[in-house]
Image (cartoon, rainbow, N blue to C red):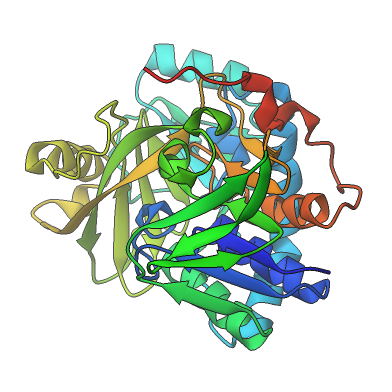
Amino acid sequence: MADVAIIGGGIAGLWTALELLRAGASVTVFDGRRLGEGASTAAGGMLAPGAEGDGLAPAVQAFAIASRKAWTHAAADIENASGIDIGYADCGSLIIARDDAEAAALKAQCAQRFGAWLDSSALASTYPQLRHGLAGGAFVAGDACVDNRALIEALSAAVTQAGGTCAFGLGDVGVRVGGNRVLGVRAGGRNLDFPRVLLATGAWTSHVSIEGGSATDLPPVMPVKGQMGMIRVAALPMRELVWLGHTYLIPRRAGQLVLGATSEDAGFDPCISEGAVEKLADDARWLVPSLAGLPVVERWCGFRPATPDGLPVLGQTRVDGLYVASGQYRNGILFGPLVARTMAACISGKASAIDISAFDPKRFGPRHEH
Ligand code: GLY
């Protein structure tokens, strides 16, 4: 198979590179930044179609469930390929109902979210570390989590070991087009020819420089900013992902309790607001009294890639040979293995394991520049 260039060294880009390398392609992954400076590192690492599946369009929910299934094998595969422990855990999710109104709504949604209902006393006896007097909770056994920072390191190592090239930290990286066909990339001030180019560029997808073509050929992808924080604990209070309204707690190895996340229409503003992260920490301390007095020791933010219709963009663009894997929104880590599998098939001209026609980048039509 001819050479493939992938722009974007996050989970979608690296994992697709690995699938293509295994199918016999020669692949170079380019990134203007260094490894781990995008959303893949900023994320929390939830693999939670149960807790996060509410409100997803049916095609996205089906993709989420299929990708969650793929994770079971994929986690062991990436660890074997890289020799790096990625902290995958079948931990389940616990969604908390604070009052009777939340309890009634959550109980009604339990089947749809694959959850088992725990009433107030069952919740208190199963989870004595939580504050007393909660109205109930739903336990979703199928949800899981992964240490996404370790995952990025592992995918990068696996790509290199499979014979791929990672060209990171190059400053501006763009795509070159001529006569409605992709010609290659421009990276580190040089033009390099590639017959196929994949943009796995997350929230920056609409902003990739496209020499000889038009930005209107790229699908509309907007950033939704998420601020997060981390509390260090001597012992993690629970193994489950826990949801309290829009706040969530993710237990990570080495006593790290990750707290997420804001959801802001703020463009690419990188500022961290101490108040926003402290609100997440206050929610966590309210729910788990033993966290009282423990400070937030790390704060960061990332940019989710969102689309106008809430569906990912997976497939070939209007430009022949130019592909996109973006628009994963809140589910970039969860979608990792299935995005890789479906995009590798698409780029190789093979049938996809799952129908991704609803995610066709061309569904938006050419955009008009303002
Ligand atoms: N998947 C969690 C988030 O986007 O905040």
